[in-house]
Image (cartoon, rainbow, N blue to C red; front, side, top):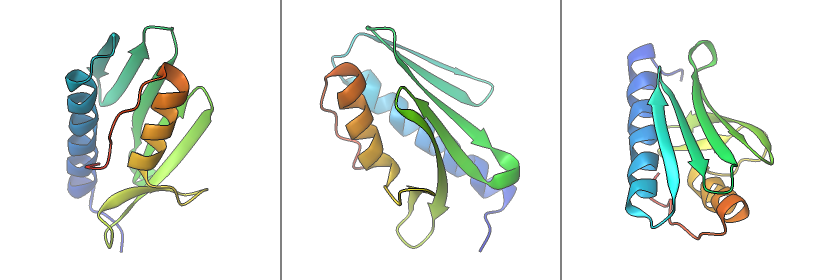
Length: 110
């Protein structure tokens, strides 16, 4: 079942807000910028995470130091899942944040 455009945008907005909240609540020194539906997280060491929406594909894309990842929303598990590795977004974010910032954050709610 394909997501409607409205539901897709609602899901991406909620996900980006949850990511922002987790980073805001952390003790990390970072910059968050959400502009035009693109969320950029800049870590103190200069690395960044960039979340963008790919509306025609109904995908959430994540660019990180380790590469680019494309996520489809899985209604059954209510989470974004990487189309190449089947890794959930929350798991990947925890791993990538640790790799890029050295901090262990909990993204289980995403």
